[in-house]
Length: 336
Image (cartoon, rainbow, N blue to C red; front, side):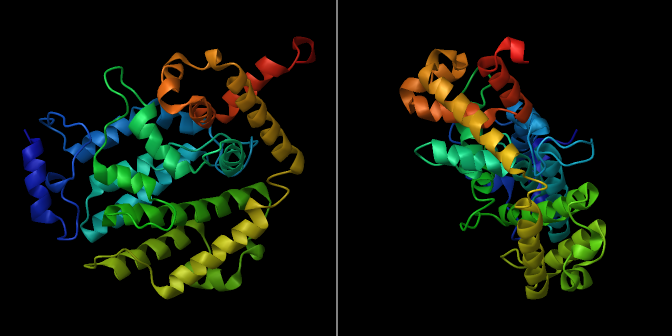
């Protein structure tokens, strides 16, 4: 039998000197007895996969609101694609694949219903402001519970990678840095794929210079970017792309913001107004009726305050749950 100790020793034998070794982890906030078989990073990954918040990602918007079709990305499929890309990079660089996977799978647990549009609404409503990476950390630290303890009690390296997968702060580990850039590689390219499928853009609309450098196909562009990342990061203490690839990836990102993310075919004014109205109505309802919050959240009101718990409840909703709940609470039965 291969034990946890065997796996920990193996990391020193096969991983890069720059890799985060689980035996040197900064540990958990609450010390726990070690598992006989799994390392701490493997246990973190498993806790995330088995969480309710991870399952809910299946019904949360990535870009397209209520898409007609089964092939558009959701927040869950995005998470899986980030994990696949990040693990490939980590493996090729001799870094810790278990840590990379745990961060990847947990990085978007705090996303709101209705994608970044929902995030904007909550940011406006909640006095403390709302950022999905901060909420993701709150999910794993506080909101997920197994009935024995509050939160998942993840290792510091996974928590750091989740919090800093976006924003200006660089993650502590190279594995966290991999997830940070893999997130962008994934969403730019799979959002292009979805936009092409929907007819919002065509192949000829894509910037020619970017296509010439990165590739004409979805798989070709990802392969170019991943290969470039590996070649430019090998045996270095920083994860980075070449200037050429980074420049053209950012140009593609700018193109997507201008032509897809802010495109009225994708986010129609009336749809955005509906999202705004639904979330504002639900937020106000729970502020006025705190007794209607789920019991586990009600119990935390004295500690965190009502508004934070209402924010937590709204952020955890899936798109369809939010719509169905709004309908149940505010639409007269004869209007349904």
